[in-house]
Length: 427
Image (cartoon, rainbow, N blue to C red; front, side, top):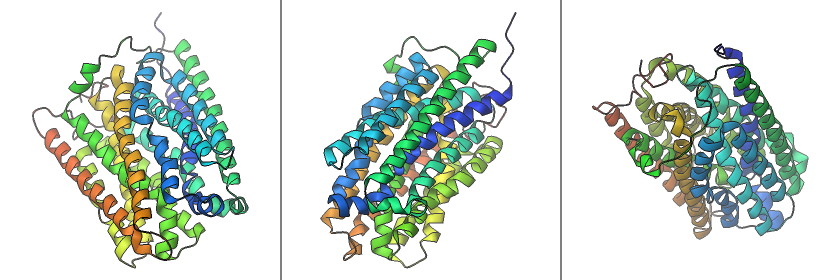
C-alpha cells in the first residue's frame, strides 16, 4: 500500500523549527557589531581586528560550504542541520570565554565553519519541502524569523543596556541563543524523521556521488545569480560590521540609535521579505526584481557619507533592497538546479559569497584604519563607502546580464515560473 503524502501543516511546522534555529545563528553573527566600540575601549582592539572577527567567520567557508553542501547531499538535511548547529553553539561559547583576541577569533572561526553550512542545510530543506508550491513565500518567512535574531542582536544595547558595561555579557547572551538553535535543530530532526516514516515524501534519500565537472554545467543563469549574491552581500554585511561606529562618529548618534538604524535592514526584511516572496510566486519577473533591488542599493552609501539627509532615508532604501533581493535570489536556485544537486549548488553559491564577505570586511577595516576613520576624522569612512557603492553598481550589471540570459533561448524560466509550477520548473 502506497503511503499518503504528508499533510501541509507538517511543511509549515518544519519551516518554523528550522527558522528558529536560524534565529540563533543570525543573533550570534550580529552580536559583534553593537559591541565594536566596547571591544575597542575595553580590550584595545583595532578596527582591523574587529573586521577580522567577522571576516574570519567567512574565511573557512571559502571551502567549507562547498564541502558542507556535498555532505548535505550525502547524509541529508536533518543530520547536517543538527551537526552544524552544534558547531555554531560551540563557537559562540568559545568567543565569550576569554578577553583574548586569538581565542575570540578562534571562536568566530568555529562558529563560521558551522553557521554557513547550517544555512545551506536549512535552505536545502525548505527548497525540498516547498519547491513548486509557495517557495519564495516560505523563504521570505524563514528570513523574517531568522532576521528577528539580527534585529534582537543589533538592538541589544537598548534592551540589554547594563550588559554593555563590559565585553562578555552580550556574548554570553549570544551563546544562550545558540543553545536555543540547537534545541530547534533537534526538533526539526525528530519531526522530519517521523514524517518520512509515516508519509511519502518527495526528495527523500541522498546522493551517492557528486560529479564535480557537473558543477560547471549549471548554466549561465545560475552563475549570474551567484555573482549577484557575492556583490550584494559584500555591500551589506561588511557595512553592518562598522555601521554603528560609523553612525556614532560621522553622524553623532548614540550607540542605541546607531544599533536601531542598523537594525532597520532587519526590520524591513522581517516585514517585506515574505510580501516580496508572495508577490514573486505569483508574477515571476525575478531578474527584473533583482535589477531593481541592486539599483536601489547603489546610492545609499554615498548619501550617508556626503550629505546630512536623515539616516532613516538611505537605511529605508537599503532595507527594501535587503528584503527584495534575498526573497527572489535564493528560491531562484531551486528552479535552476535539480534536487539531487541542490545542497552542492547552494554550498558553491555560499562559498563564493564568503570570499566576498571575508575580503570586504578586511578591505574596509583596513581602509578605516588607513584613513584614520573616527570621531575626530569622520571623512575617513568615505573610502569604504565608495567600495560599498561600487559593489551595488556591479550587482546591477550582473542582474541585467541575468535578465538577458532569461530572455534568450536558454532561459530557465525565472521570469515566467509562478506558484503551482511543477517541481521541474515547467508550468
